[in-house]
Image 1: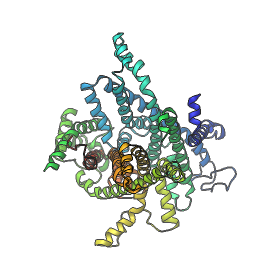
Image 2: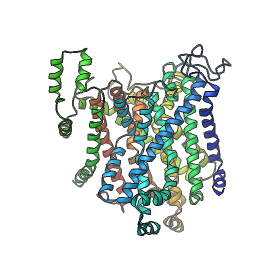
Image 3: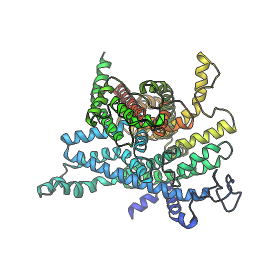
Image 4: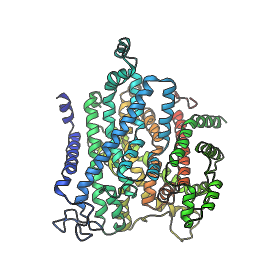
Length: 276
Length: 325
């Protein structure tokens, strides 16, 4: 309850939450409002928004309903973003926990690998993955997750380093608990809040990465991604600029919502910071 | 001399990570369907089996993976990046041709982002929780959430198509035959939109960290002492707060060097700039894996170099930190 009150204290965070709920609602109701295939032919191409009551946001250069693509695109963005974030967090926690808990040679090796991933520009690595494994929906999702984990690993490792010699861990060790139990049942729950808050940053970046990949036509062409639509509208930008403009606003608002909610969570969970 | 030994030491420290990157990518590319010979044969439109065998032997593709990995790394030590399949030139040559545009774009975007990020961050921190702060912080959030390629497209529509103030893309007027200063001014003209587009997201991040670290440093004891000494508000800000508040910003620049290179892939594609990022995109589309690997290698070196410069800067800003560490 206290937490909710803290969260509601910030109007910006509440605005972010409302925006996020709206995007989730779009994703869930996409099948209800637009039951037909959003990538199928819907009407005459290049109809401006509001010019035809049947197509609120108009139609694109191949005669597809933009509103339908926006609603279904919300689904694609959220699903890819959430799964990729989950993958990044799983890998990051595992590597960070092992590295921070055991230290020594294992820490050295794992940190060199983390460093390697951080030196590589992650969008470039994403391009390599797509070039090698193709650009199906699943591949793209996994690839985004695989390039996004290093910050999580660093964060988890730092938390583990500060927690691993606390009294409660030593007590557990004296009781004869196994390493696995100490790591996952004792230390991890204490390290988790900061990781959860950070996941909003990963989610925001994952959504942006997916849209950039789709914009370059390197994501799955068979799913209605916002980035795809922007890329398609690029060829008719000089006159029918709305085709690219509308999905861009959708991405902007979604990423904004995720960031604001993440920031709100952070402030509510760390009341110390609020005083600033 | 000290500089060189320092640079050498830093490079040696980065070697394990570099080794992991290169061997990891090499093995990854083994998983890609088809090899160089398949690509070559496809390009000339088929060939007879004995010739294909010969070619495989020529490119040492009949050797075991570990031998080839060793070979590959050994060639990299000599900075031999192999042959580009689509450009029919050594990869190193192709990359060097494309490097200036990317460096120019990154450098100018970084300068822009740092300058405005710092200025806006300081302004926001000085008026904390009042309307200038709210306005600047909101602006920062929006810039951060904006997909850069979309901003680029909208920029092209507004400034190139609608207002016709700036060129829509490219790297200098084609066939204008300009030389000297005029040529450079022309390029700057073409780089305005791409630079702003790439800088925007980093500006947002720098602004936010600048504001936070200014607020934090302002509460420290030495700032109170400086004020108590009777220094003017501006002097305290510039000499005492700013210098210390800059440290997190400098760290972030190093951390984000890779992100910026990644961002330039998209920006260069949007604005048709002949840079490294666009080359990466072309080599993915045309399956020129040799070139792609070379670009990744050069990018990794670039990121390491940028981090080295950042560390030197760090030591300059804060004498307590020793760069040789």
